[in-house]
Image 1 (cartoon, rainbow, N blue to C red):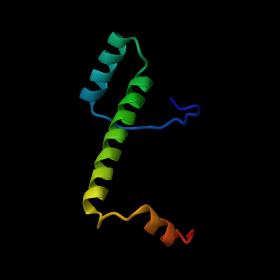
Image 2: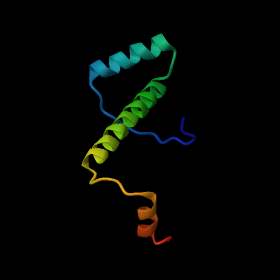
Image 3: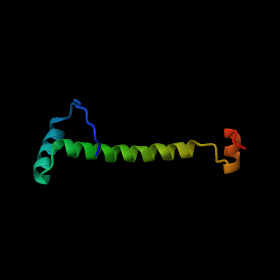
Amino acid sequence: MYKTVKKATFTLSIELLEDLDVMSKEMGKKKTAIVSEALEMYMDYQDIQLAKKRLNDSTGTITHDELLKKLGTI
């Protein structure tokens, strides 16, 4: 979990808020913790999807030596 926090305001549907309230009570967890965990999971998933898209859109790979040449280290 993050060491620093900042308050944010979001608008959610009534149904989603009600589900969050029920889940919070049943799990004995704060709503903030549930939302934070859900957002982290969602963002991890989206990061994987973006990486897959970048990989599919890439023009190919280069060797380690080619990379070093491009960087000017050899």
